[in-house]
Picture 1 (cartoon, helix red, strand yellow):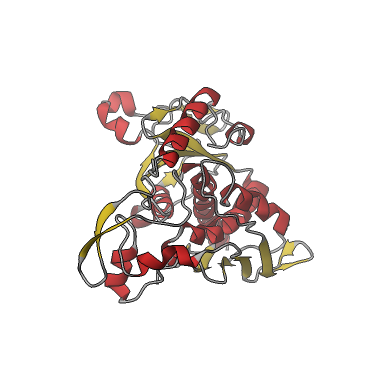
Picture 2 (spheres, one colour):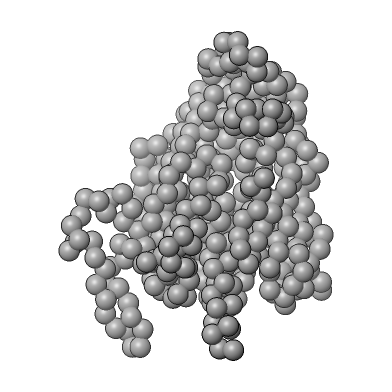
Length: 363
């Protein structure tokens, strides 16, 4: 049913927006990794609703409970189960959507595929599903930091037509978390906040771009052809709600350059090869080359808006709808930890796969 991601570090998310809760089962986590609910909660707090005037007003503490797989503060190597209970669901806000499809939402396609759908908050199509991903991502980041010193930082680069100048080589988590829009460029962050607040008061929404950098990624992660590292990264982040585009390195702008301009020339730094530029985005031939991995993810404007739109009913009658409920006028600020999580899960999975190859070659 499409709820599992990963090969060796494998996650399965569960739950619905207005059900009893949401969560994740993580299989393949190595033993003896120190982890606590408090560490996981840090990223969940960055994802949770009700953070500021530019996010949904739904109030959820999103407190995580580790149900299995951790003993005396360390992972045991067995499946880790994490649960977050829903506390502030208002299912009555969605009564009209039981019969009417929200434009650009998953309502119509879920109904067409399954012949049934959970219309309360969108069920599995709700962004609350990403709670499990973020919880798993916190563990993946801990593994990567502990075994390889990998650091993963995402941030808002663009909201609508407001684009910030940000150096991915030097940006810090403190800069990202210094404002409610999670854009490390302070001047542009203020303009972004004003824009989101303006469209919120008009009952509308806007989209944008999240950029993410992964530093100190070991050389050699990823496999040729169908399991290229950037291909799996693309699948990972494009599975996030509202995602509509993926770039790595120079991305689409690279098409404006010649090969001479675009190629990353090599040089030696001690015994390690390096590249003078990083238009490849840290991956060449589907395999990490040791440079920073830099990706960008485009997110569409939130589908549910508080303005009248034309739609159809489940029975095929044309009608109109003014959506109700509590929704983000822009998903970007809360998408930042989601992108970090999916990048971490993907790189962690490929790290463990490479370690397995290394061990086989030594035997």
